[in-house]
Image (cartoon, rainbow, N blue to C red; front, side, top):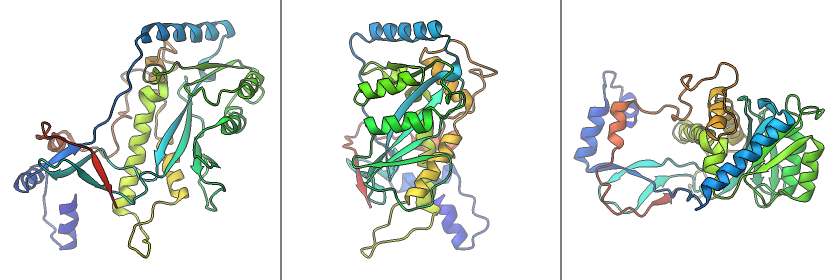
Amino acid sequence: MKAAAVAQDMNINDFRGGPSRCFRFMRRRDLSSRTRITVSQQLPKDYQEKLATFHAYCKNKITEKKIQPEHIINMDEVPLTFDIPVNRTVEKRGASTVSVRTTGNEKSSFTVVLACQANGQKLPPMVIFKRKTLPKENFPAGVVIKVNPKGWMDEEKMSEWLREIYVKRPGGFFHTAPSLIYDSMRAYITDAVKKQVNQTNSVLAVIPGGLTKELQPLDIGVNRAFKARLRAAWEHWMTEGEHTFTKTGRQRRATYATICQWIVDAWADISVTTVVRAFRKAGIITELPGNSSDTDSDNDEMEPGMLDAVLAQLFNSNTEEDEFEGFVDGE
């Protein structure tokens, strides 16, 4: 991509750089792809018993109250940062630390609260920024903006989510249909929140600790695709967007409004099939509503603009045995 951009700047119209050319360049320069290391969630020893208990609880409530798929809601808090660096980059073979270009805001965090229904529909996202006052920017429609000093969900924000998003979903305003809402965060499930949930004719199901990867649909099959789209938007902005700089030459981060537009677009791009499939994988529903099917895949989990298989071979690092201490975030 960079070579093609340089060729265009030099008015070279017949440039045909492909995967093989990129591979030869990397080989000549002694370059390879490096991957950031992540640590997976460890399952508790009694996880099978907890899985069975949780599934039984949800099944009993759904059967007892005759709760329909459109009233089974999963909500989750997704911590994000203003910079969303890629997990792969190119560096010299044998390098123990690898620099990734950012605006220096990869530690400035905020929270996106996502919620979806077992029939595949999605509720508007709520974004909680870490500040005391609302930013004075023109935000896009389809997102609820909140602030607090810590930038994450608490009892107050949970109450606001129930009042401003959950209750306003289709069929939720008059509380005529019983509903099931479940999440993994116990900290803000206070008596006041439980009372508010009961007033909406809803039942709470709190996912046992350590089992979100097994029981939470958003974690199982939605959040990854959502984050991939956000990362693609950030990458495009970093390479193609208009930027401003401080007096010291540091690039300013994207605006709050720009980030919210990325969130709205990324969330809208997640398909009904993807959401329904995630609920089924979590064991919350056994049949796919409507015309959804496992074969009706739209490759939601593939990152937008993902390279084809030939080019992807370039990212098979041949230095896996080298010691890799992680990324050093650079500006």
